[in-house]
Structure formats: structure tokens, C-alpha cells
Image 1 (tube, rainbow, N blue to C red):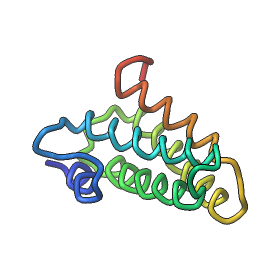
Image 2 (spheres, one colour; image 1 turned 90 degrees about the vertical axis):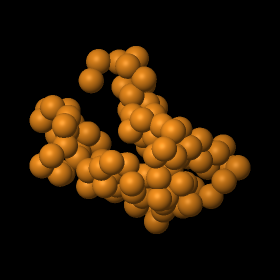
Image 3 (cartoon, rainbow, N blue to C red; image 1 turned 135 degrees about the horizontal axis):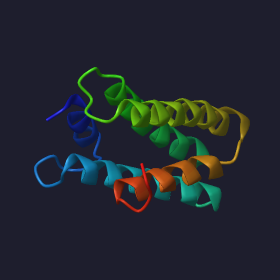
Length: 120
């Protein structure tokens, strides 16, 4: 199990005994994206939802930066760019009242990739 998988499971983003790493990532994105959608509709705190999104992307960015990460270099670079944007925009949601919509859009796109619905 990678540090990434352990980190996701430890934070309640899946069970490492039942799910694959890809499935755990999908579930984590699903949960956080749902929080962001609730924040967008006024049903939840935007700051709390953006904080959850920030924690998720921080875990992923840490894993992507590891030398032994098995993803292709170009995909890793693209995901790291998304992580940087997500972290910056999440801060804007938490401190400046920015819309969480861009975070929702990014997460949904990543979820489609995890399901094999879009080219990586």
C-alpha cells in the first residue's frame, strides 16, 4: 500500500481492505465534490467544503511528487498542475468568497478519468 492509499484511508476516504487505489480515489473525489456542490447550493459551508478539497488534493499532490509514482510523467505533471490550481482556488473560496464551481468541474473531470470515461 502506498502512502497515498494509507493517507486516503486514514482520513476516511475509503477502506484500503476493500477498494482498489483507483476506487478509493474515485470515492474520495465523489465525497468531496458532493460537499462542494452542497456549498454551491447554500446547503453547506463553502469554507469547510474547500478545506476538504484542499486536504484531498494535498494528499494526491504528495503522492504525485513521489519518484516511485507509476503514472506517466505527462499525466503526473498535468495532475500536479490541477492540484496547484485547486489549492490556490480553494484558498480563494475559503478567504475571498470565490465560487467552488471550478473545483467541482476539475473534480468531476478527474472522476471521469478514474472511471475511464475520458482519455488521460
